[in-house]
Image (tube, rainbow, N blue to C red; front, side, top):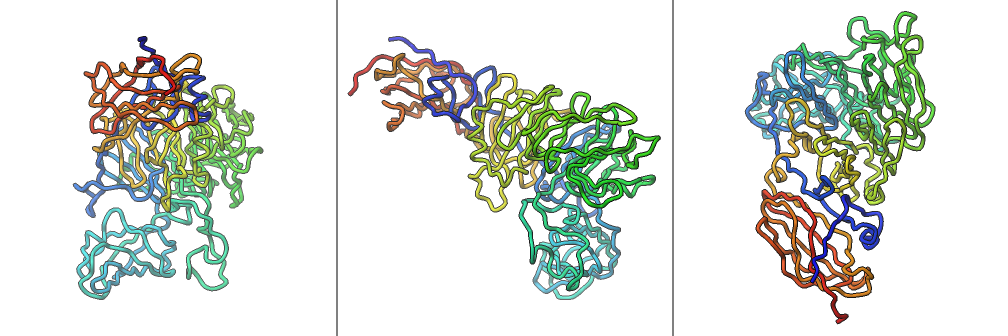
Length: 625
């Protein structure tokens, strides 16, 4: 009896029927937490939590592991001139620096710190405290940090002065409440001389973890002013809070989408906060509202996209403005500098931008442009690169050695001198199950060790009230193979410098080292791959009997093998297995009959890892009964 060699092509195919995939392949048609390497399926690496620590009230690093406040959305990593390794993380309500495992809050202040006297009012047995803060200017959900407070009616000073601050509940223009987590032992007021630092929030586009329309009556904060008084700003939004944080040398520029431009000076230390660029000496006509900021290379211009025109406070989502060369504070065009602006035409808004080979690659919601430095008098030239290929999210674009990969509304694209749609055999599967109301939470990630660009997205299977990405689709650009899977991540950065593996954050603010071990942070990872149906005879007219499988694989632990057989493509399926395969397994004895059979291989046990080669089936003709 012959042993039939089963060679399954790399990549998962889901956009045709499994039977068609078998006739044209065979291919793999389903899987989770599996990648393709050198043409063969292998389980992905695991991940482990890396503890990070907030500061105590004295400014020292706490000994208790903590999580970031808000949903992490954007990571940047670099080493400064002092040799310190820095990770910046922009969340839905904060901006952080992580250094030596410590979490340092560098979120800008909304206004000058307020000096308060005995501002805290407690109620016996309750942990909610009312704060008197005249003209605080904050909105519901904004953050405040106190310093210098003394204990009040059983609530400790360290609690009130905690480094992470408090998210407020708006009461009126002169007061708000905070949840301290400690119950008071009496009613009354106190706290002594207190400094209240108000962090930027809703007025700067910060604090929105999930987009929601807020139109008409009741959209704003109730009681924020008197009847009939026009509000100075509106917190109604349709877009989640997103940061862009490009480097300016060893320092950081930062912009919350539709907010102002900020600067963090690394040499000032982690105790300093990011400050408004417009507040710095010599600053001139800095944009007051921008969708994102980037820095061009090698000419070094700060560039704001989707910003207000010079001399106007009205945002133009298609306008690009850039600073003078080597000066992020000077935005006034003159005959002696290189500041300037340009409005794009195709689209309704600039979505994202990415530095690439000798130009800035800019995507609107409908088109992509090349923005190249040409020097005075025009500074930059602009060319339309492609239409009907816009990006869907601020973080859905990735630069891989000068090639740009990005996610469109229903396709994936590549720019390597010209724009091309990437053929994707799971395209309909991904875009049909993707929650399009949450496009803005999609993001691209790179894993250079395995030649993968991965897009994380929110699936329609995610029924959380505020859903975050739970699924991914990966493209191996070397092997031209696609894979799919499930993983809850909200941002990602590839291995770089002392970070030997990619690292990421989950929606609850915890840091994970990817490609570490074989498990999901100490829990067994479910990983499997399933093939398309394989014709057991060349004509497809005969029923065949498989009575032996000879595996070809590298495995640590055990691998489960299940065989599914059918008499006809749409008939009921017969399941045999799962059979356990280890490194010592020479063959699997079994009996399965059908015209076509499919193979599923996977594991769900601690410590397991595996890579699949070419399996062989022992096949012979069988009768119809």
